[in-house]
Length: 143
Image (cartoon, rainbow, N blue to C red; front, side, top):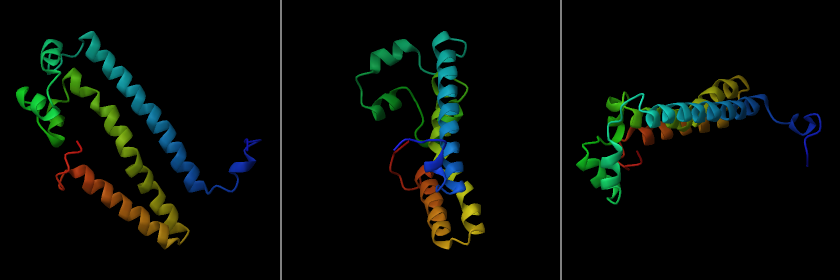
């Protein structure tokens, strides 16, 4: 099934096309930011929080011990270190991680307008669950 003049996509609702477009461009923006910030890190334009010599000395440690020895904060504490080259690249990662939430937020008004309250409810619950998970309140240690 190949797309000929986009005919196979005619049945796809506009809000789903917008969501897919947001994900596509958002991912490329996130990747672009990661490439640029990684260049800043590699080039030394922006000083890292953890020097490469320390990284290689402690590379063998589990992540929690690695972070503890280097005094790297957990959870969202990395935001305090955003001015360092090795933490600056987290911006691109956060953008890509937030795309699903942003995408669902754009779907909610479209579903409300269509009076599709089931999908509206699902999108709202999804946003709330993702925000709760990202907040760190549950203590899952995912970030």
